[in-house]
Amino acid sequence: MQKILVWDLPVRLGHWLMVGGFALAWLTGDSETFRLVHVIAGATVLAVASFRLPWGFIGSRYARFVDFVRGPTRVRSYAMSLLKLQPEHHVGHNPAGGWAIVLLLGLGILTGLAGWAIYNDIGGHWLEELHEGLAAAMLTVVIVHVAGVVSGSLVHGENLVRAMVNGYKRGAPEAAIRSARPLAAGLLLGWVALACWWIAN
Ligand code: HEM
Image (cartoon, rainbow, N blue to C red; front, side, top):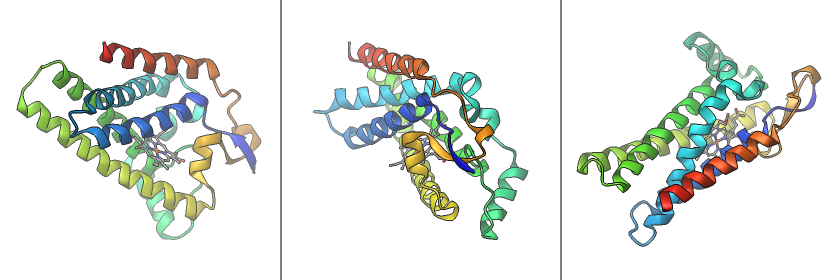
């Protein structure tokens, strides 16, 4: 086991853009003064989540959905390994965390689309209620996600937050990804900038 590159740049950049976008959108949700800030923050979340979907099929090994979206049997066996205090180590996302990620991406897209429709005067009061409900559901999943990250870091004795920053985790040398895919990260930045510019104009 040694330090190996696991998270490519689009995954890491997308993650922290999503964290910033979600936090800002949450803080400015009720403010008239900061309406544009809210809309741009929401557009950032929507742009990152919509980029992440195709990246889940064509991205590097651990970014792919096939690597971390697992059936109930694998989720149960991972949960059991935690309870027995003999946690299975996964180089990529663990089977339980994988479902939180799918939920966060799905909710990010639905919340963003509902917000976009409201901003464009499509739908009525019900859509505003739906937007708020989706955002609240997302906050709940975020809390569970962060609790999972903190407890996962403790049981595995590995700082998962630092790994989401520098891309490195523990693993066998042959399990490493070969490239951080900087070009795709540039595309992601362009896509986010385009979405923000488009919504603001
Ligand atoms: C300060 C708060 C947060 C921290 C410390 C954090 C940390 C992390 C870490 C360490 C991972 C990798 C987990 C693993 O090793 O399997 C991860 C993945 C992920 N997190 Fe967070 N997270 C935070 C907030 C959020 C928020 C607010 C969102 C969404 C709005 C979010 C969405 C995601 C997604 C989508 C992934 C999967 C990354 C990918 O595969 O592209 N996180 N997070």
